[in-house]
Length: 279
Ligand code: ADP
Image (cartoon, rainbow, N blue to C red; front, side, top):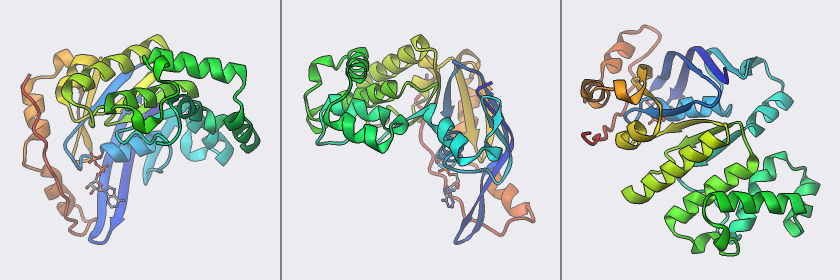
């Protein structure tokens, strides 16, 4: 098991009192799985994402990564874990003034010492150069290697983020709304590229998505969060329109649940519901 989450609860302290972002969530992810995480705004997707990349700790429950309890890891072990996880964000987080090639090399940053970083920035090793070129090739940007990141189109920039992650060579890729800034046709081609690279590279992918169509068409497993809980977790062919209606409907039960729970003072929660496209 690459991830095993047992009874994970995450509470935040907000000005209006505590907010429960995840409520006794249990979830396993096997190596090489490709999982789409769906859910309306406020469902807890970002919180789960941050737990998975170990930038946030749960309030209670156990999170294991590749068999090790993350809560019991030393800071060195946590760093090693984070190196095995590559992240892709909606905002590309590229360095605009650096070339596509240099941005790709940056994928190595996590595993470089400061000295190696300085050396490599000035003159990358033959191996790093080859690896970066292979990554650019894989995403179809070899001919753009000398172009500055800010000269690339939106789709090319997102492909460059994928090249950078490939350079890191992680076991797990966590992607937070990786296609959200792209128009539908581009989103489709980048999604198909990412899923193919993940499958061929024998990596695990967990991606938060708001586009239900993309999730159902490209991911073999779709997990849906609502009101801090998993409401379904299944193959796309088993996801019904009732499942989706329930997921995105406007009545929020958890508000009632939370207020009825004596642990909590009344905590306003915002739910902006995104329409899902009919299949
Ligand atoms: P999603 O990514 O699905 O929109 P989030 O994980 O961002 O959901 O948020 C889940 C809930 O936790 C929401 O009610 C949100 O307002 C709340 N929340 C998220 N981050 C914080 C924080 N830092 N402080 C207080 N409340 C937060």
